[in-house]
Length: 175
Image 1 (cartoon, rainbow, N blue to C red):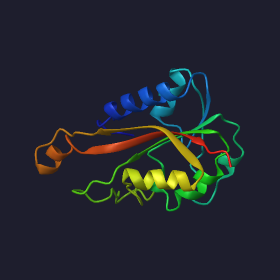
Image 2: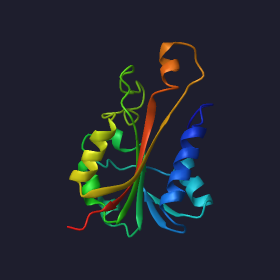
Image 3: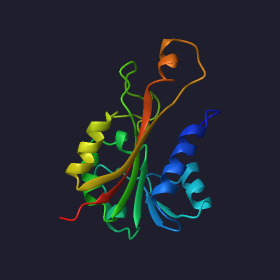
Image 4: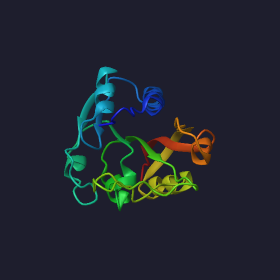
């Protein structure tokens, strides 16, 4: 999946944030197909179910039918055209989600070979906050971090100082 480019820092920061926000052994619906991070959450004591690869822009069946206490979405919402719809349909009371932040010096990611591996959105933190608020969530905790790369150049240098990932813990607002 990562072809010699395993996201060690992102996984470390994400699992630390999750463990500080959600007590074990919480049941989690992890948006997206099973992946190495799903396995890591399971190894750390969480009960994990994943969605099955359906288009979450149009098919919320697994989200609506889930009885999980928590929904996680790690680098999922940037791939959706309308993430509001799935966020609004989540039944769980808790959400932990991360997104890549928009970088002013780099265009949005787009794979030329895999249609599912493209970013429709790369958010600024305030945009993601607003999306969550409109969908009925209240952010309780947040964090950001950089993602340096081992390359030479102006953009790689900027990645040492510019936050790339944004993660939040949110709870469903009582309406």
